[in-house]
Image 1 (cartoon, one colour):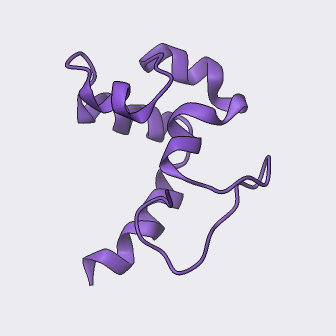
Image 2 (cartoon, rainbow, N blue to C red):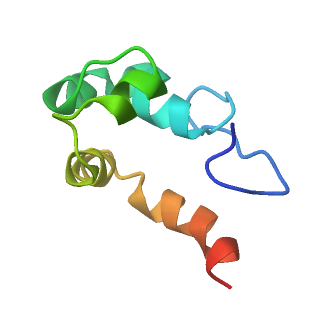
Length: 80
């Protein structure tokens, strides 16, 4: 799954894997310590179905990881 919708497949600068929502939220090892401050799930389904994790928690995680500017770039094509 790409971040949102894109015609190209961006790669993670650190590990060169596809830069996906799943990669940022669950897989990228360098974010493990930050991730564990916010949530500890093994699947996107668990993360998004958990009532204790709201959108603000996910946005705060993304902000702290400095991925927010990267995420905004992927939303721009959708907003036009």
